[in-house]
Image 1 (cartoon, rainbow, N blue to C red):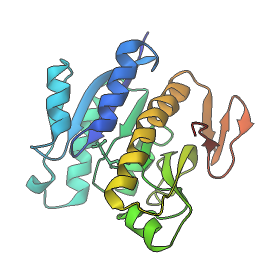
Image 2 (cartoon, helix red, strand yellow; image 1 turned 90 degrees about the vertical axis):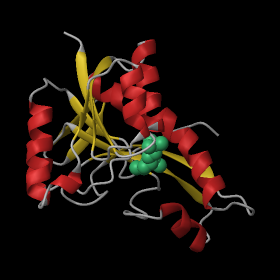
Image 3 (cartoon, rainbow, N blue to C red; image 1 turned 180 degrees about the horizontal axis):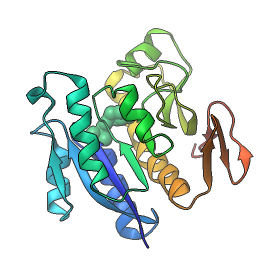
Image 4 (cartoon, rainbow, N blue to C red; image 1 turned 135 degrees about the vertical axis):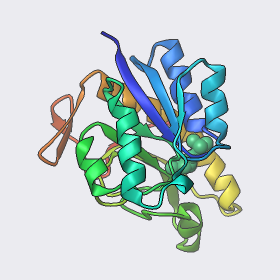
Length: 215
Ligand code: GRF
């Protein structure tokens, strides 16, 4: 049976688009069964509809508590038979109950070289710190914000004339390469994340994940 994933997003959906392209070309090793957005105007919903993928809008503004929102979100996901749930620009913090329910089947992409800069404004923080490198990290989600074990990390060199937009654009190009790769590893069972230990093909990954070689 083919593998099935759901994508959770809040915005334009360029990472979702890259995952969709990988799915369509066969390199992902799975199908996108469902796209969920917490925002009605998310561009990613339009991409999904155009591709004929089932969508769900679960508007967080209609909920008075995070727990109630997460319960409905979990219900929508449980109604599918999913091998993986990927967060692709999903701008909601998930409750510990939600995270533990889907433990080991929940991935995120974060635009920094984790463990540097969890949270928001990552590129600005890298520029402010005078960092030589910036980048992005795919990681499994745990209860700690952007703190789960890294799977795959890509870095770019920060150029002297970089601003947030130029840096974000270069990092985003790499996000579009590493996220489908990490998902493909998961779907082909090459990744194992059990008892807090993460391996690729049976070999423990470094604490910053596998390094993506592209430069
Ligand atoms: C990306 O930079 C991703 O790393 C972060 O949110 C952004 C989403 O962009 N989590 P897009 O919606 O995939 O274009």
